[in-house]
Amino acid sequence: MQDVLSRYSFPKGFVFGAASASYQVEGATKEDGRKPSNWDVFSQIPGKIADGSTADPAIDQYHRYKEDFSILDRLGADAYRLSIDWPRMFPDGTGSVNPKAISHYNDVIDTLLAKGLKPYVTLFHWDLPYALEKSYGGFLSSKIVDDFGVFVEACFKAFGDRVKNWITLNEPHIFAVIGYNIGVFAPGRCSPEIGNCTGGDSSMEPYVVGHHLLLAHAKAIEIYTKRYKASQKGVIGITLDTLWYEPVSNSKQDKAAAERAQQFNLGWMLHPVTYGEYPPALVANVGSRLPKFTAEEKKWLQGTSDFIGINHYFSLYVKDNPNRTFVGLEMDSSHSSSLVRLLADKKKGVLIGRNINGFYVVPYGIRRLMNYIKDKYRNPIIYITENGISDTTNSSSPLAQQLDDQPRINYYKTYLSNLAASIRDGCRVQAYFLWSFLDSWEWGSGYNVRFGIIHVELDNSLKRIPKKSAKWYAKFLKKKH
Image (cartoon, rainbow, N blue to C red):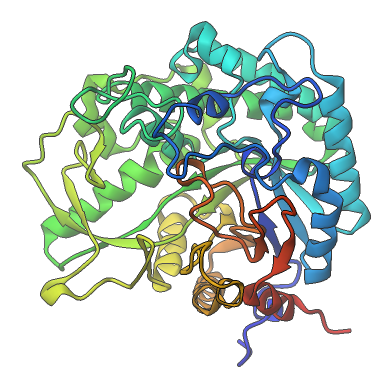
């Protein structure tokens, strides 16, 4: 490996880019025929978004994408990970596709390609047409699977001649847990004893929603594989979130607890996607609350993804906690059904890593995670589809301080070094997208939390200003001529 970390520390052909999500950046929530999403409705409920904001105008990428892609091109990136907004494509969730949405995303994709940037497209990054939520409960119903199939087929048909990397879902685990277990993300459902939700059952609904998400993923894979893959010559996979769980001691119990935590987080989705079955820890601890797959469903789940996208930010220690008895899946940052306790510190109060807004910086975590996936899940091709930390300053800090994000540079350097090491270990990592390209609307945190390497002024100008980390990334990406 080179002394100085750069794109040349990675294999030839390795793809570097930056990521975003349509709802977090586009704005224009009422333009060109778009109708409300689950998040448009949820963000209007008082107290649900930390700063009381909504994602309109977000950072107005709907109108500013050409400017944004020019910035990304100047950084020297190879690719951009974006998502397609389902409520923009199908405002009523079903029926006919919105021609203005097709026209918009055609121009987005063409603009990227004209700048030499490959589009990596996520089909569902949490923005569900509210009409489907209202009609039958969204992902609580199996009806969602066919409607998702109609949406993704419209995308393959319209854009697949140019898009060669498709991601079916972003972080289905988070969508199920945060939306239906603790209720702080749309649609905001949970058991009464867990939070102030309008309804829900934290012991059942996350598993039902997770199951339907997996079936929706399988439906997308089936449609693409049967009808489009041979002619379009693209690949399709799924993006999953996961921490690295480090046992707090070398005891057999704590090591087993770390494995349970990993199965409840990553394995919940990756085990079915690899083996067609839920992981043993879920089967043992969730029991009859866990839905079953049919033989046909298993066929389109098991081993059909061309790659696995991984969103990884931080690591935690894990301690065995056999007596946990909460109703919900997760509470106080701890998985209850998995009988583990998640910790940030070890003996004598030493943190596992620096705490940056609740994210514990543990660079070795990404290397151990890659090797864990290699060993347990048949060494799949992996794209790192998100990795990053939020600003240590806030929007009231002087601008010069907001732009001087040295902790983010340190984070990227150490995580990328460990990622390169994992490739030398034999892990098949082929792409890396930092999170995020621009400061954006960060779900329940609103504009309070900012992950971008490009600062966005939160006034009417929405001016884009590169942070120190953007300049570092450009240097890292610089090609030899």
